[in-house]
Image 1 (tube, rainbow, N blue to C red):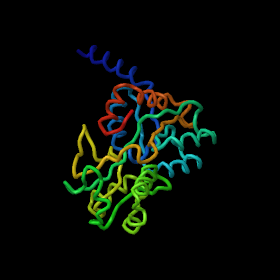
Image 2 (image 1 turned 60 degrees about the vertical axis):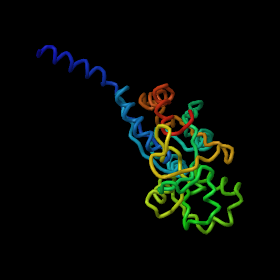
Image 3 (image 1 turned 90 degrees about the vertical axis):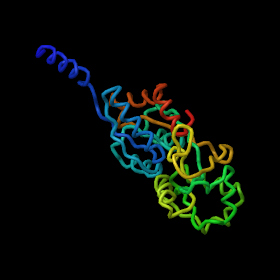
Amino acid sequence: MKRLASLIAVLTCIGTAHADEVQVAVAANFAGPMEKLAEQFQKDTGHKAVVASGATGKFYAQIRNGAPFEVLLSADDETPAKLETEGHVVPKSRFTYAVGRLVLWSAKADYVDAAGAVLGTGNFKHLSIANPKTAPYGAAAVAVIDKLGLTATLQPRIVQGENIAQAWQFASTGNAELGFVAQSQVWRDGKFTSGSGWIVPANMHAPIRQDAALLTKGAKNPAAQALLDYLRTDKAKAMIRTFGYEV
């Protein structure tokens, strides 16, 4: 038995000898899915993803200023492309890992109708959105409001979160009766986890293509490439779909 235990220990060491950590900057809307993916990634590969989540616009500034991130999971496709032209992304490493959906959501059940008509009723005091200057979901929300012809009406009611996580927080706590949030924050396995919502038709705003990229600081880290490869697997794609993304 001792000999068997020793053999198992040796095999375990061999399997994990080349395990590494990868520093990942993750868009706020993808924080929940990434938590699940990181856990499964470590189980399947031995590598550990150390995750920081926040607004894509802020990550852009941090990466340009030398932040130690090795992989970027952006909330858009423009930021990774821009970072590549500036020399911060390994050429040809970019790809779309998810296409996000915008949702008008309330923590109250039956508050938001299936067509989002509640926006035009005026029966609410506050509407939360992410900062449109740094968060693609915020920019999408502004585009929807404008397309509905409600910009002037809703402007005084808008409360702005630093990122989509904060916009969701305002709505989830009731500080804002309504919020434009990412579907991934309120959706699991084909239904809303709580409250009520309207999934905004994709043609009402520019597609929210979310690109992943290998940053130059991670070019020589096997765990960084392993994570990007993992996101392309059927297993990872299936997990991403459960949060309401298209892949």
